[in-house]
Image 1 (cartoon, one colour):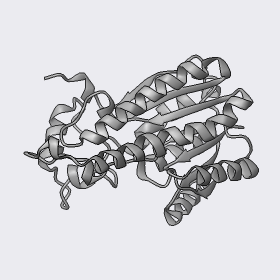
Image 2: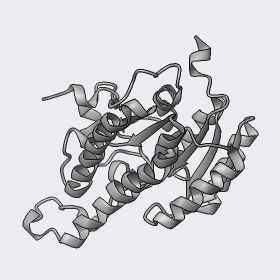
Image 3: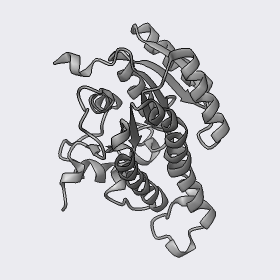
Length: 269
């Protein structure tokens, strides 16, 4: 059975691999045998992630790229192919939220600025998903083989309060995932999504936890809504990403959204 999840010979590009969740997924893919390119803008964090992977016996490189810049992504793709070989796994983990796309408690949705809305959509849908799928997906389709794993969000299926633009943009990421899965199903390229629940990371830690480690009001509300009674650990995304990357383990899986949320979405009241 372990051979089903052996990624030896696979080449994975992890966009957003310099972050907490993306980095954990990069480590998981490398541990399963893939050669991994950690792709992002923060060179210091990217190279530190590469060192962690190499220390554990894996193979990895850091490649600098701006997900909002097609030329930068094309250069990153070509660099990875030159150093590691044809890319067979793409994890689109770049993205995030911006304050200008958020409606504060008691705020007026009608006053939400258009440029704030567009900035969040560009970050998550355009740079975080569309452009990488076009640029990296082009070579996968040409080779007739590949697995694209888009990172959606719990807010893709349950719109969360305050983060209106983020929720809508992540719902669009999920819709694009389904569309591409249908289009590329006969071309050898599988397209799926992972929707993490609540994992404290750079962008949301202050929303969920106080400086002393206690929960904020929002954090406590989420914990009370989560059957497992805790937040997720980044390493708990490893199984899902390796499964979707493995051509033998998930060869008939495409167009799916894998929710990893501790049961949050199972609670309706």
